[in-house]
Structures are given as C-alpha cells and as structure tokens.
Image (cartoon, rainbow, N blue to C red; front, side):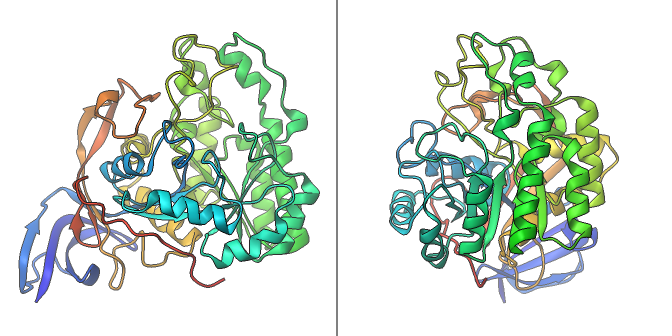
Length: 437
C-alpha cells in the first residue's frame, strides 16, 4: 500500500522521458514503474500527456528577509517558487540585514523564515573582507557554501573581496564557493539619467572575463571548488573550458534572462531589464546555449533579485539609479522551455539544467530527480499549453518583470513537496543543511 501514485505518459527520469507510474510513500519515491503498473494506493492520479518533472532546484535566490522584507520575503518568494515548479531554493547571503556572514546572522535568518516556507530552503553564507575566520563555524552550522563578490555588491554591508582575500577565504574552509565574477577595474562610471546602452557599455564582457580568470586562479592555488555565478559573457567560456581540462573544480551557471533576452531589444527606459552582469546580445546568448548543450555551463538558475518599484526606477527609466536584479523564480521553467523547444531541445534537457544539476551542486542528491529513494518533489507541467505573462498574477512581492506580455509555452499545473500538493496555504517547507564536506 502506498499513499499516492502519479502516472504520466511523459515522466522525466534519468536518461530521458518515458511513460511511467511513480509511487510515493512517506514523502519518498518508492517505485518508478511502467505506466500501466498496478499499485495498491489511496490516490491514483493519471496526468495523461501532462509531463511529470522533478521539482526544480534554484540555488540562486535573494529573499532579502529580514531587513529588506519590503523587497521580498520568505512567504512570497516560496509561494512564487512553488507556482513555478521550484521545490528547493537556496537563499543568497546578502540584501538581508544582517547578511549571512557569521553563525549568529544565520540564526537570525532562520528565525525570520520559520513557519513561512512553502518549499524547502537552504542558505549560502557570505565571504567578505575580514570574516575568513568565521567561515568554518558557519559551514559547520549548515550553509551550503559561500558567496563572494569581486565587484561592488550594491549594498554596503556586503563589500567585495580582493583576489588575495578570495584566496584567503578559500584557504579557510573546504567548501563550495560561488563567485559574482565582474572585475571592478573594467567597470565604467555611470551617471544618470542613463540609457540601457550606456549601462551595457559600463559593464563590458571584459569585466567578466577578467574576474573569471581571477576566480580560476584562486581555484588553482587552493584546490577548492569554485562556481561562477550568472555567467553572462560568452567570451569567458574558453577560460572555464581550459580550467576544466586542467582538472580544476570549476563550474558555471547562467540564467533565463541571459539565454532569452536581447540587449538590442530592451525598450527605452525599461529598467526591469537591468541586472548585473547585464543582458547581452542574441549572438552571445547563442554561445551560452551551446555551452549548456555541451555541458560546459552546468545549470540554469533564476538569480531572483527583486526590489520595490521605486528602487527599480520605474517612473524615471534611469538605468544608472535603478536596482539591478530580475525577479523570475516563478517564470524560469516556462521561459527556458519556450526557448529550448524552439531550438529543438527536449524537456529532459531542461530538467537536467534546472533540477538535477543544481541539486548536485549543493549535494542534495535526493532532490531534483525522479528516482527510487528521492524526495517526492514533483511538478505536473503541461508543455504544450501557453499563457501570457501578467505581472498581477505573479506571487513575488513586487510583481515587476521584463517578461510582462510575453507568450510562453508550458504551464505548471501542480507542484508536490514530499508528496503533498503545494497550495500556498500550508507552509510545509523545511530548512535544508549541507551534508558532508
């Protein structure tokens, strides 16, 4: 007897897509059988041609609570995540007050999130100048690793590290480090009112190229794991490829906006398109897609980084003053699927980039996959249906999005967390911690 069986003619399992029946008991997947297999169960749901995907794992989310909860909070962020088929988020250490740079700050962050999480939540710690001695204890307290900026983060309480300080942090603890890779020496000054073209010119591809080289040098010198966050500039890909050939533990991610938006099509004054590093041109995006297909870029995550409409400078259209960040945790799956299907890529590819590989990045090997023993975090996703993005229907706190008005393929019908449908009424999310080294 099992609690729940979900059947679909399009179940995404390791190796691709097939008809299957997934049996669930006590929050775990206990069998993945044939579509017509018979199970003794209380609930047997046939999804037909609606696909069954593993819950997505988004390892790059800025929740901002406590301290800047008017930007985003755990309740709104995790509701948005569930609505987008995301069953795990890993929260970034900055924009909240205090930033997660020591054990006490992690305690404050967890206390603020308690009782508010509709999906599972893990936490990154932060590496800033002067806190290298705090990193081992913070790692032991359960963070999945440490984020460092090589350029100004945008908030004064989370300053960037120098190349020497990055190596010092890596030497302090054997952990996964994730790096915002832009080199300040290659960033230009920007004064307002500024256009998107001026903003893009102030953050050239060379800034990413130089910072990726710095991060790779730190990985080489210390032997540590270094992950390049939100890669925008395709010109840095050969550096990452060379590092991988060398045997260095270097990986990289990108985001839906870098894969699907085009700098040449940003409307005048549309500050909802501002993010750092910036959206580049379509030819650059083509190279990022190829790197995904080749496995050089390992995963696609949101970098969900919302703020208030006032901070986004919606009224002024000033790219110099606007906060840099795109809120997309609810939309990442249909955005990527829409673009992937147009390129002849499979739904299984999307699940690999957005579920299994991000889960593996942070050592969550029972997440992001449909397999016996995995958590029953699942998504019923209709890949053929379409919808038009209406900001008022988004769940994140400030519904500002560059995808407004876009027609997208793929609708999330139901999201299950450990076998329970997420309704936005009962907060069943758990805090996740690092397991092992």
